[in-house]
Length: 275
View 1 (cartoon, one colour):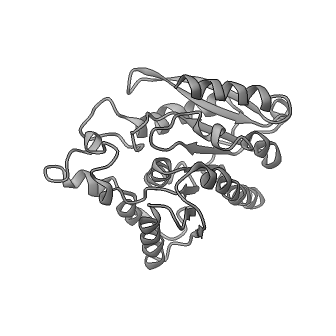
View 2: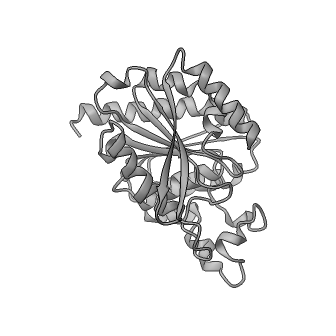
View 3: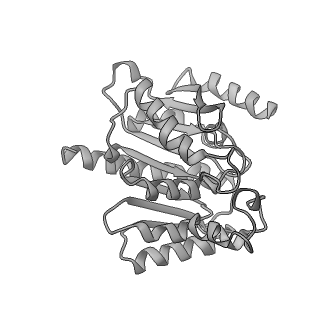
């Protein structure tokens, strides 16, 4: 953790001289009774700018709020180019971004939706409309972004996943997920209700602008292909990309650029439509 924070501090010092402004904030969670950190990246011209669209970027398993700025330092420049805010919340190293049905101390859906997002809208100049909000993430965060956006379509119009674990059921012995959901014998329903591939059934055509990206050599590629096919079967429009790559920061650290451009185009379209 100390090394991660040292690297983050170095990046912040380097980036602050020639790109967007990188803040580290702390927001108290009433639902979990603790302070939780986030990185907020805002354009260099933020003080003079009009309210901005917001992209929430969620970290992966074993990561934290600093993972995205470490993997993709170009984000501090992207906010200038695209004129938007990026928010990278901490969600514990293994939360999977839901409210755990077996551990009352894990309430990251509640935290992000009911505590962090209102704080961001109150303390930053944001366009407070679903059309100008997007959420994406890497690995565990890809699952979280899809899960939260589908369950809260009133708040998000745009969502993505990068190398996302979009069906957690094949990995029930991995990453201590049983501590958040219970085992698959006694608590099978918890796994069925909280995996993205099943949550997709709550989607109707036109509900969300979706973009999904996964490396062909990623161990999550099969579940990504299955989600892609299920979206096709349900006639849900989406953008799906596979390219050479594995489950690593080199892949999602660059692939995020394409997703930000996708979201920027969606924001511009919404602006043109007067939303």
